Length: 330
Ligand code: ATP
Ligand code: LTN
Image (cartoon, rainbow, N blue to C red; front, side, top):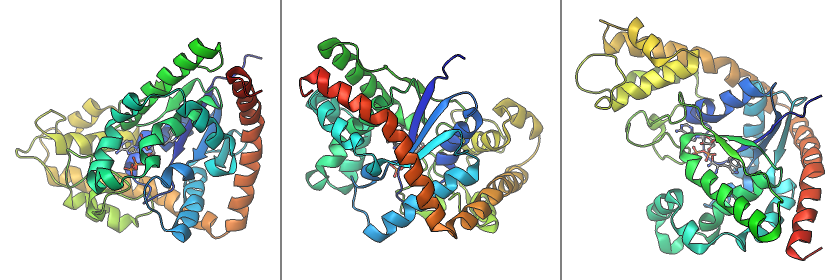
């Protein structure tokens, strides 16, 4: 039998999982899980790059695991695990720190944005190093493809650079991974500020729809979402707010944006937002309900994550040993 290609991806257990995480990442993982050999991680070490409340963090790890399952990831087909429980991630990260360059990390826009927000002087060294740990996550599994949202493109390009440089300097070791970034849903913007991406770390709850928001809250947030001037429901550049809402509609229903535009020809923003509220509320409701059920049994979630870590280690450990050898630590 032909070997399936491998995918690796992850989400940080920080803040509230939102519609962008769902449409840009999880929903695509669910759809393609049959086709690939899947590794989906809860990247708790990445979450530590900005301050976290310790108790909250462990609660969030289970929450992300529950959302993965509730969204339809099947633990028979996907290895679901927690990054910190496979210590090879941190170990490979150090080795790759010695391959990645300071100049490259200085050019990462996510670091620049986040460091600027909290003050660059007090940003953690971990925040600066974040993309190297991400490269370690991916290269440790020799993943062929990495399904993520558009905001991760630059990090993936760096991962590819690190893999190529390592292979050149130490001999063929790592698969150079391909980004897998779909067009619809890859960049969901804030509801109140369509120039900013919908983000977990946003202090404004009205800016995002949490996967765990109650249906009425979802409807309300969409009703209040910013719109553009004019009245046509079309995804043009001068209509960033409506274009974003159309993208959400298409992402949730699996339709193409032009199909949705056609359906709303001659209708007003009010009608469109009302329907969109229903589509999103109804789409998320079963995921929310199932997540809450799963969270009622934390021991079962922990057991699943432990089993996942064990399976992940079967791939990660030999790859780390091989990297040691290549670098002269064998
Ligand atoms: P933060 O904004 O706090 O950095 P985040 O919301 O970007 O967090 P992550 O855990 O960093 O969340 O991202 C998890 C996945 O969700 C990644 O694949 C990322 O590309 C995707 N993603 C995040 N935000 C969006 C968005 N607004 N639209 C589409 N995909 C997104
Ligand atoms: N940086 C990613 C999360 C992440 C990730 C990964 C995604 C960490 N390691 C490996 C894909 C593959 C983010 O979405 N902010």
